[in-house]
Length: 433
Image (tube, rainbow, N blue to C red; front, side, top):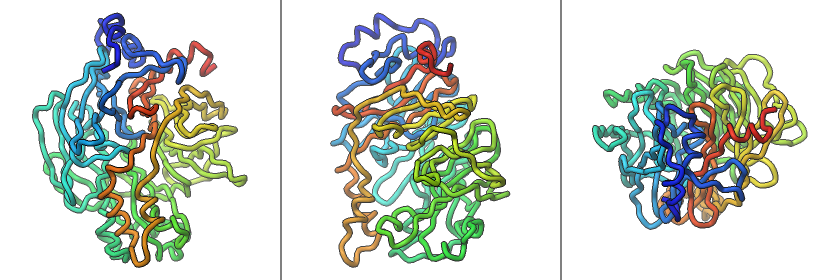
């Protein structure tokens, strides 16, 4: 996996992954990359590209022994869903997907604490949910009907949450009925789907629902709370606000896992996440001076939001498992930096500073360049057909389950690879003091 595997033999971890921290296990064999950060290690190497899915999914298995990733090359439509042995770095294939992209891979994630893997696959115009044991056996396939590929598994592994396809919400850019479209829940034992919260119900919660009613609103980015029976999602009109014909709308909302007790937490700029213990939400929002900051909201929508002092926020935020630290990318002068932040003081520490190569969003480009008479949905379909022509790598930093390491993607000019920050080692350099 690395250009020179001698360091793997020399630093082989002889103890089980569960007997040492995630950071210590990786640091015993992975290659240090001091040019990126003094506590950063490279976990993979070419010729194929490697990527973990997204900032809301911990790629570490519940027992900490395996790391979940996707491996692909740009000329092959079939990607490999893989697991890495965290004690040795050995990679094996658990499944394959034909419905993936370079931004969020195949949404591969662990299905609860049972040790099964879940990912999406499919062909043109269709999608299936696959669950499998890490050795590739015990595969189960659930065809999905009218479900977008942005899906998220509940912490207990019973449910899959997704949203209605944009093509069904806005055929030909027309706004159709909202009462029967929105947040969908799939039973991962039977495959049965049900609508648990509609766009219409979400719209009612907005402070200015009447003005927003004429906008192309839909639900995206569903995130279950790790411990509480709550979900957050964003109500947005992304794509239809790009050319200024509609005002930008981004509200973070929360509901029970069955769609009950809905609340509008607050207006955001982009990317939200849960506090791992409390019913609080972190997101990016501009303050009165136009500065992007981390903002903390109550999940029940009560009270005023709080800005994290001093720190500027952007990118994809997540709390450490104990809730003490925030991690994000996109902060500082370089948008590819990975930083850790103390939300009590706002103190920021740069832990990785790769000079990362990444493309833009093909959907945004297609919408901006659409021809006269072409709808936004037409442009999105055209962009999807050409998705293999645009490649992007975002860091999407994510914590290990024990909080000792942060994993991120980076393309240094030769394709996306996985890197890890040893947070324990950073503490020896003064981080957290």
